[in-house]
Image (cartoon, one colour):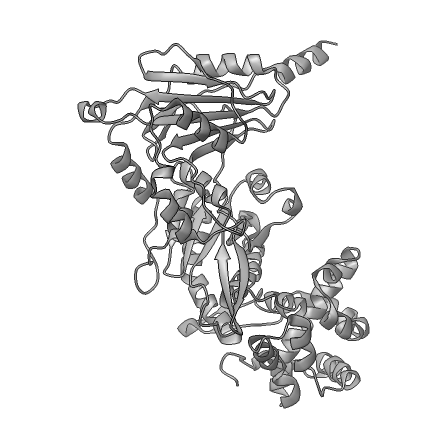
Length: 526
């Protein structure tokens, strides 16, 4: 009985705000959510549109204007194990109305709208502030209640939300310097999301007694924020300095107020991570060296279009729970994904299984490259997954030479070779839903078949001078470039191929002719 009472008391304990943390990018020192983990804000989603005019097609990447705006106003957030959240916003600009026939807009249109008078926010205009709170919090607030302030705050307001699970506050801190006092003092927002059914009155009491009286201004906010982020940036590796872009700056900004996160860059990538161990940091330094080399190898296998994206984001989590929270329930089972809408390669580091982590990075990194090399193109799953499996085992040797040895799937392939060979026509026709359908055994065989097929086309057929088979990957890419969809490009690439004979040659290669293929270099063609 006593144990039940203790458990019930713990369940009703209000979220607490303890410790002290500097947020140099915001110029604040505050108490975060006790027991909470700082979370990076996901990159804004990208939506690829195809526009047709006068017989020509153009691919354009558009965004949700609210999501772009939210990212500019978001400062930091924490989540605890009970689902409670604390979100800090920086009240800078209003959400502008943007005239568009589509729900999504180009990034440059959003930036232009943010410079207009409609986006300007008057910090002394109560209507402006209420509209900002509504847009940031996702609810229409009631008129605010002014709160008593202590020595650190100039103003504080509580906005009733009409929701049991959400509290909203605006506050202004007293500046530390005379120069700052002469300028307009910015507003900040705190949104508390209650995830454990604690009565909102208890959460409000905790916030107003633990958080508000202790939040304070830091000196020289903007300079200290930039300097502090630079201190968490590893030296750049690779030829040339990284070129600035909205996507690169957004990626860096996403961790600006996360004290445990740091940045590593190359001209082609920005790598974000919260790994603290020396082993983990060594992994990131290795990625600075190897990712550009692998990207160049991928480009030899699949030459990029003229409109290819030249920059990639890699985000590596140390904590499995933080990874699962970031990628969401649909991908919580995974250890790494390429998220095409967020334009991010997201990885959960497994320091005790470093080789597994590297395989995942190479596999998902190929998906990332293929998406960026041919923007807007939906690839056949056999080509996409087959090549991602093909590069899992990539090795970088002397002279930065990349080779592609057999990987662990070879044992399953040889054990089930007749079944794998018989599955080839099915895999060539499969879309994503069909490829992932079935139980674990079927999905594993699908991956193995796709890998074995690509290995045969890239190394087996050339090593045996089977020219009709060797040209299939390039023919597939050419038909895609000519405007065919993935299914039509696959059919055209295999046109004239006797499938029954192809399956026999595939099986014969794996039974008797692997030796020459092991020595064949598909990047050098010999």
